[in-house]
Amino acid sequence: MRNIFTVTSCLTVLICLLFITVFQGCSSKRTTETFANGQQIYIDEMPEIEKEQARKEISLAVNDALYRYELHSGDSIEVMYHIDSAIESEDYLLNVNDEIQVDILHHDEITRRLKIRPDGKITLPRKGDMLAVGLKPMELSALIENIYSDIFTNLTVTTTVTKYTSKMQELKKAITNSPLGQAKAIKVNPDGYIQLPLIDEIKASKLTISELESSVNKLYQKQFRNFAVSMILKDIVGNTIFVFGEVQQPGAFNAVRPMTLLQAVGRVGGIKSTGSLKEVKVLYWDKQNRSHIRTVNLYNILDKMQLEEDILLANNSVIFVPKTGISLANEFVDQYISKLLLFNGTSFGISYEIDKVKFDY
Image (cartoon, rainbow, N blue to C red; front, side):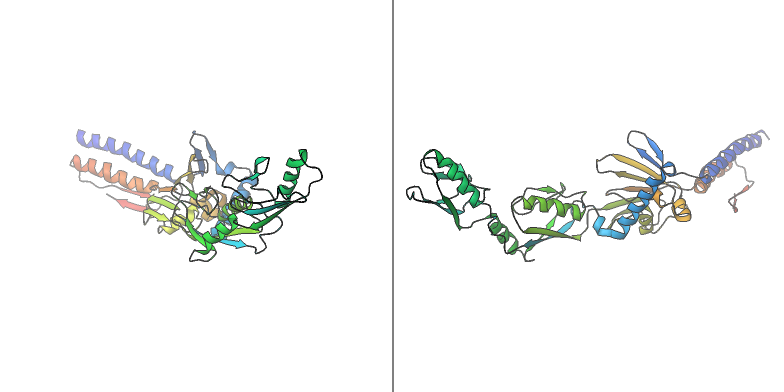
């Protein structure tokens, strides 16, 4: 009798703990955002204007798809060059290896045909070196007139470009040798940068195509006139999402377009019957490389259309779907109550009901 009484007492305690676990799991969960410093906010407490902004951002990203996609290492881009044939105009800027004719009226002894050296300079009689690269021909003429003003008065100088060896020609050569014509196919390097002809490396990761296109055009426009590039995202390989826990197909997959948490859960076949929609965890890093954890109640999104509680997944986001309270209770019964009874040689059975589902032991 004492043995049975002891088992019954332990069983009572365990069943109480079991129901506490179940009821906690069935309680309403609020979507939260937890920052690396421990700060936590509740999404349902956000001002309505911020909720509306979050809904718009999610909608735009999903509907605009690749337009709002942020680039990652390994992604492929096609860069198309648009060059106006009128580029060599009076606004032409002198470059290294250009050949120029400097005519000084009534002073043939100073008139010269010169070639701009690799250091960007030319050498003038009696005056020595002066910088010519980056100047318009008319600007160079005015500068030469000023330099010689201490020797001659009322000088008239004319500068004519007799041979163009500009960077534009180098650029045309670099891009027309491509199988794509006046275009280049490039990949985002592992460090997040890309390399294009005649400009410095530029960081592409975490930029949209339109943002990268704008940055590249600004760099080229410092050197060229009547010139622009446009870009197309050809292949996405860098946006990896990791999903584990109570889902049908746990593992990693490449997201080929901007994706929300709800879409990612669908992408892996959905949540198992043992999984909780109310406490889905997302670990991600923002543009400043700060870590965040968002706990999302997907029921609020599906049943109440609270789209602001969803989240656009950043690259390398990690999703975890925990078990439901009922699933935990099942494990609890199996691992503790049943084994306790068997350990003590007790053969009577028990039954209990959770959410209208009856379980017998």
